[in-house]
Image (cartoon, rainbow over all chains, first blue to last red; front, side):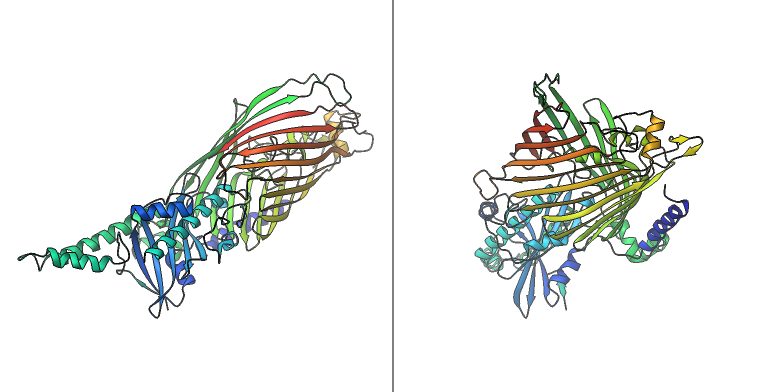
Amino acid sequence: MLGRQWQSRTAAGLVLSVALSATLEAQFVTREEALAAVFPDAEVEAERVFLTEDQMHRAAELAGGDPPSALVARYLAREGGAVVGRAYVETHVVRTKRESLLISLDASGTVRRIDVTAFLEPPEYVASERWLDQYAGRPLSQDLALGREIRPIAGGTLTAIAANGAVRRVLAIDHVLEADR
Amino acid sequence: MLAFVVSGGRAWAQPPDADTDQSDVDSDSRTEGESSHQPSDLEELQRQLDILAEEVERLRSGEEEAVELSEDQVRALGLAPSAARSYERSRGVSIAGYGEMLYERFSGANQAGDPSERTSQIDFLRAIIYAGYRFNDKFLFNSEIEIEHADEVFVEFAYLDYLVHKNLGIRGGLVLLPMGLVNEFHEPTVFLGAERPVTESVIIPSTWRENGGGVHGSAGMFSYRAYVVNGLAGANFSSEGIRSGRQKGSKAKAENFAFTGRLDVTPTPGVFVGVSFYTGGSGQGDIAIDGHNFDVRATIVDVHGQAQIRGFDVRGLFANASIGDALQLNEVLGKTGTSGVAEAMRGGYMQAGYDVLSQSNALGDTQLTPYYRWERVDTQATMPVGFDRSRSTDNTFNTIGVEVKPIPNIVVKADYGWVSHDAETSVNQFSIGLGYVF
């Protein structure tokens, strides 16, 4: 049996943790915070692009799945007038609730970094930074899939499937938009 | 220095030359009397479209609601502005679930060749609804309501979480104990095999949940959980393990508490190793001789690992359980001979599977994974003085099977298991499992 003194100390520690926690940071970054971290020296311009039917069709073929909407929210990062990167907000359902990822690309269209900006499922299912880091430097390819270049999340299969689909859709949309530029 | 151009966003259907095309159309269609109004009208429409698009996109994203607290409101909460941000975040109900059905067909003869007299069975093992509610960015409720065998209702877990920091959460309620590979992640699409490994049924009695609370979180490659919970009920231990000692959160006796936790290391995505432990009294005031209560301390330690790389899925676990005051426990329970509760129990398994479709796009998301599991479980590894080992409690299992996932949320599994022990009364079985998760 655990001693009563030990139990009291544990309870006191938990209460203290709760009290101190009000000064600590929130769980997810905002997209503005994420953009500032990815493109620290850039001027970032928000864009909202309406895909044409042809662009939707081409993006779906490349991604292996339909874009969720013709409305695409993205940001262009410029340094000295030159575009150094683009970032897309991708929102999708994991189980029954939504997740939003800010997927940042470099100028050539490969993944630079991914940030979770909203995750409404229970937090134990959220993809970790280390897992999302697998995508850094990767372009769109057939091998960009779970069980190939991308490893799964133990106990988080649906999260991994949702995130991988999101990355593929963003890379496909970016490819199509840049091709039409 | 980062600068956001808030009003510079624009929307177009043809990205390349939308501005040029539109100005051409404007000049061509301009008529006398309207020439001074149309461009500004179009600009206003463009501005309004931008605003609407931004609103739609923000609503769609699930990010922070556009509810801003005034300084007075923040002061009324008694919080610093950053702490008050949690009151502005999204809320909502979350629903999910899973279920599994199991068909078991037993061999007609046991290990010695005698009639097995086991009856085939098909059971809707579990139908589960997860229900959660996020009060705000920091507080949430999560639960799993289970109907077992189609007619038994349980609360598998129901807890409140306080998300203190990205590295720290505080949890309280009916919690799953953070032991082994299966107990916390027991959905049928997660583990290989029509049935869970026996080690994670009798040594780590999944699904194991008790009342209590503690902390959880992760930092870098490390993740951890540590809880204080009510202890097991040792009066229900048997020669077959400690599974019946779970109190399941229902009017649980709390004369003895326990401490449990785990630490996992994920050196690279898809690969992790870790250790879990549980220690606490199980007497609960029920194991007393001549007025002296015995703690019956149960201590369980497991080491585990898992690797999922390029279609391969390899897992292994070893668990050891020791029971203090086993002699006195057996005396109070009236157990004799080979029916006694052991001082030590242990078990472990290694399993491997390979998704043969993982490197091909031919069948889309379909997965086809043959697997093999070797397992040994001994629930009477060490007996107290005066008690003998049963010849049927040290079992070796060899299971070979295949699972098919037409989509990641649905699985069909079929396997055949060979079981052996010294008494030669074990019975092999063929199993088919059907599972879903949403």
